[in-house]
Image 1 (spheres, helix red, strand yellow):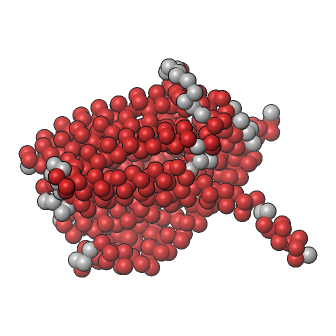
Image 2: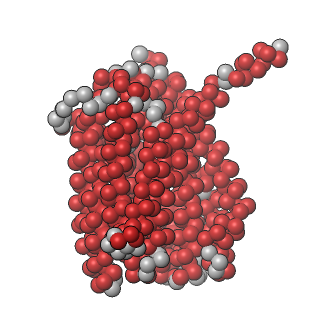
Length: 468
């Protein structure tokens, strides 16, 4: 009897799916953390040069990050397309789709490069010191040269993760982080006779590093036997505009969603800045920490997208629904753990970033709100990713835009700034706290609506499959 129970338990479908999703996701998590680490290294190392150089990096990176995340969202269409073809066993189609996705990456990357250079012109019109504005513009001009490589890298990222090969992502990202730190050291400070470029050294290291990561990914695919059945570089193939258009229709709503979320947080940062150093410092510390924590549900979400896409490619809508909810459940479980951890250790987290008592106190309070929205944030990213696995991207876009731009920002504006013309605004501005309450409400709305939409969509696909 004991043996039977053990065997049954060890082959539990839920446990097996959790183990599979974990094996797929943890290398992506390490890779995401390494990628975030590049930005941390840029700011930390430039801060030892001068305040002006740090300001140039901060301004340039803020624009670059928004465009980067938007491009990343657009290229996520590749994950869904390849996962469906993988599940259906259409290996010849995978190699074709990857070649077309590289064309799409070149187009999207050049568009992102152009957007970054156009945004650089804004620095002349926002009241900056001219020296800082000039450095920030040149920073963007240089770093934008890496955008085409980044978009093509994300095409291969989507390909390799969707055929269950995620360890290359981790290894190449760690390699990229180490390269970034070394080249930063050489060019920021002018070590070993290299030119002392300051902030521009970060732009050089990032732009060249992205091209190097793309080259490393191509080399890995060429050398590894895991890619033999789907090898995309067997022949030259021109752009198929119909298929590229189809992938863009799938990816653009994801890009818009990512833009809406990142720009909303960016606007909050700008609005909080008017309340002084303590408020803005506490806000940035809390935002930086939760961005790191968010990498965990984001990685699980990308893994769930892959698993759902593969199941739908097989034509197994029942399994797709099952893996979607197991993935969502994993994210919810992590959300509960992270909420508890942040709430219990918020003072210790604040102390790791700063020794200023006033900033620590404000940051600890903001982290309490961050703990409140961990469950919502984890749920919304898991549900949205699962729906993308079904190749449904427009409704998550609409829901998340409503949540961030229709709820989080307006509520934060009213509570944080307390405009006198609004009848229900508080007597005094709640400053950063008000904006974080808005974020809690916005993410809660997103989680509820996306979970409802995923449940409805997955049930509909099951009914359609049963009807033949």
